[in-house]
Every structure is written in structure tokens, then in C-alpha cells.
Length: 378
Ligand SMILES: *Cc1c(COP(=O)(O)O)cnc(C)c1O
Picture 1 (cartoon, rainbow, N blue to C red):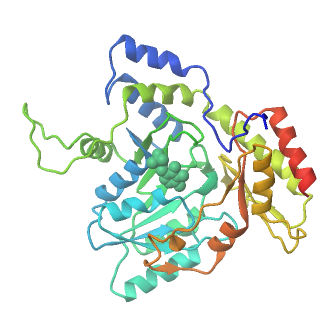
Picture 2 (tube, helix red, strand yellow; picture 1 turned 90 degrees about the horizontal axis):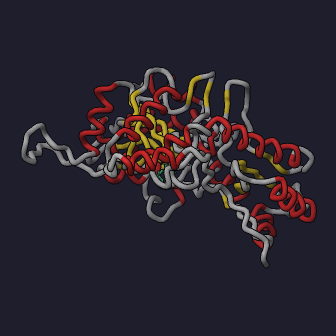
Picture 3 (tube, helix red, strand yellow; picture 1 turned 30 degrees about the vertical axis):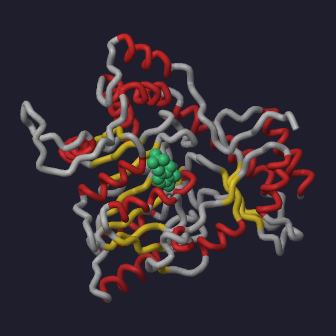
């Protein structure tokens, strides 16, 4: 088989990235600080609006770790976390010695179910454990039910960390994802909507909090001519070279969101005629998804036994990558002993869902190849 691989989501450079990298080399700013880092942060702050302060970091996981530290989460605490997500949403909870409490999803956005969330909060409080934070995820770029969840967080006085790793450019009622919570986190990993090859950012509501994050991310050096430390530090800052890629990528972000949304439209045109197939879609006009990944659920009982796994295999045979949805955290061997609230929605999504090739760089020819497989399969 010599057909070129069609990837799920691959890096898509805009062309401007190398200019910023050349500048960094010319000035010998090859370090985890410099004008590209400041410039990339400024670009993100301008883009997100709401006067947020952004710290560019080595990964989204590092950003989540710092958010938990800045909220003072510590050993013995409990942190509520969406179960249907990538493990990087939950791992940092364990880094700080806290225990995750997992919450099911709802059917409209596939994100945290507000009903299960309230059940969990009430039950944990009754058990004498007041949750110390909520990690909310906007999966595949789809904003979660922010209004309901923020209302609960406010009522019970629990801070929210928005995991917007997959949702840069998505918005809810016109406000950008990542700017609603006490902290937001972004990822620029290779498969995300824009990439720095690897990287992330912490979105904070004040310059003071951003400065604290940068302090922790640069080994927590006190102000002194020698190396003086009164905190445990981390090496989490983004390099000036990678931030140069980020600046170039910001120039094409809007165009790439349009292209990803175009891929979603392409799948919608196809699946609206397939009984038993449900594409993840914006539930109302309040939701705007960057459609980082287009994902579909197949109900084999309605689609003549055609399952998402069978579709994955026929795509793979044509060298087309697709991937099952995230396996919920409460079903992962490493997390199965932690509490879980909800029913089986996340589990059903995992069992019947598939992420489809969604890159902003897919060609007309790629789409034709995908359609050909679909037509033969359905
Ligand atoms: C990618 C991702 C992360 C982690 O980001 P990294 O930059 O890879 O550390 C966290 N949460 C979600 C939902 C992600 O998709």
C-alpha cells in the first residue's frame, strides 16, 4: 500500500514561523525566555481578550500543575475532574498529592454533566470532604455547559480550572474558552489546533498570578545575586525558539479554525444522511467550537451492525488514521479506585465513538479518499 497517510491531526505551519526563529538565532536568544516568549504571550492575551495574563510554558500538563499549586491544592485534598478526557487533565491532581473525583459527561457537549457534578459536590461535602477545585474540559474544542457549571462552582465556592488544551479559539456566548475559570490552560502539542512542537500556557486573571506562575516555572529563585530558594521550583518555561513557532502559528489560527470547521461541515454533510450516526455538534448558538477534532458516534443497532471500531479498521486499511474517543478516567487501571459520579454516558461515548481526520491541512483529494471509504462502508 503506497497511498500517503492521512493523519487525524498533524502540524500545519503557516510560513511565518521561521522568521521568528531566525530572529531568535540572530539575537542569540536561545533560552527559556526572550522576545518571542513575551511576544507569544502578548499575542495570546490579545486574542483571548478580557485582560487575561498568559504565561508560556513547556506543556499544557505543566500549566495544569501550576494552576493546582497556585490554588494551594495539597496532599489529602480532593479535586473534581471530568472523567471523559485525556489523562493529562487528571495526572497533575496526583502530582500535588490530591485525589481526583471523577464526573460523567452529558450528551449535548460530551463534557462534564452539571447534574452529576452537583451530586458529587453534595455527597463529598456530606462525607466531610469539601472539593478544592473543579477541572473542567472543553473536549474536541466543544465548550462545556459553562453557565450551569460556573453557577454551581460559585454557589459552593469552588475554584474552576478550565482545561482548554483542545479549545483555543472556541467560545461560549462570545467569550473565549480558557477565560472563564480561575485559571485556564492551553496546549501547543504537535496534534493541537496550533503547535509549538510541544508547549502550553497558563491563562491567569491577573499579572500578579502570572508572575507567581513564572516564578515557580523558573526554579523559584528568590531575588538575590546568588541562588537563593524558599520554595520548591519547576523547570516549566517555554523556550524562545518554540515561542517563535507559536508567534507564527498565531498568524494563521483564525484561518485554521475556519478550515477545521470546514472539515466538520464536510462530515456533517455526510452523516446527516446516515441513520444511527451522530456527529458532535454545537447544541445552540451560544456554543462556538474550533472543531479541533470531528467525532462521530455510531449506534450499531441502528446502522446494521456497523460499529465505530469496524469503521476505524476500514479507514486504517486505506492508510487513513482515526481514533477511538478518550477512554474515561474512571475506567483507567491507574484511576479506578477513585470516586466516580454519574451514569454510563462517558462509557457509551467511548464504546461507540470515533475521531475522524480533522486537520486544517487536509486536501480535496484526502476528502475524496475518506468519502470513498465511507460510501463503501455504509
Ligand atoms: C493535550 C491535552 C493536555 C495536555 O497538554 P500537553 O501540552 O500535551 O501537556 C491536557 N488536557 C487535554 C484535554 C489535552 O487534550
